Length: 78
Image (cartoon, rainbow, N blue to C red; front, side, top):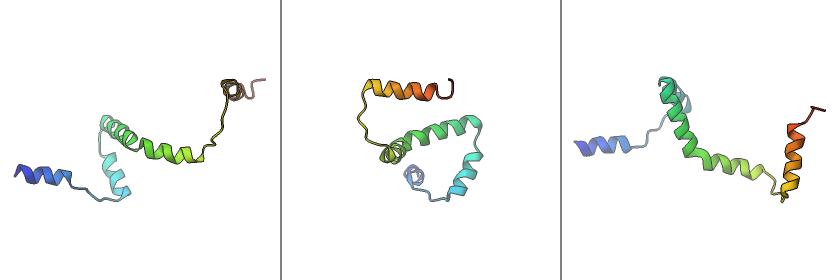
């Protein structure tokens, strides 16, 4: 009996994105945060790889980086 229960919970469940969202919305606020954090943790590498492929591979010095930081931070404040 216990083996069947464990096997049941280890099965992959196939539901649509809309079904998943409806299920997600049924949780408490605290549980939604926990679920979102876990999804973030589980998908970080994949999301980073998607972003990273679009980033330029520029070789910048620390001075060049700080120059860009100041441009962005103080843009329009002159």
